[in-house]
Length: 192
Image (cartoon, rainbow, N blue to C red; front, side, top):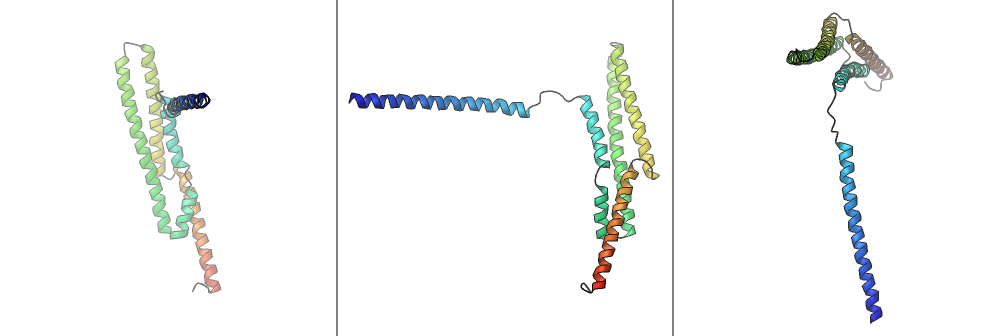
């Protein structure tokens, strides 16, 4: 019996040791998972002004970099009328001006906020006052540029013309493809 108890006793102790090791490993794994998750998904750093400026730039470039040629091709193939082309070009210009209006409003709000900060720090720090004035001046320059682009878009000039020309080219190609297919299908007599 001693043999059996010593054998089973060791087995029980070994099972208990294995069980404790598994629990310890699971707890350690759980602790590591929490730290990894926090490190991966939590950013404790506040956004900087440079990131906000890049986001503004990305928004304008994302508007201008859309695939207007493909959209024009699809519309030209589907609608194939000069009236539709005219309406779509007006819509693109209108959307561009609306986008510029939003950016102008954002810049004006930012200028107002910076001017308020400048008033609050005036007399305390000449250096900080000058830095704020530089930022205000930069926003004023960007504001004037946006206003000019808005005027240019109504005169068929400026940045929007890249988009307009791409859409027009795509529309004409789509319309030509439709006409070629219609003529080809009509001449074979298959689709009459």
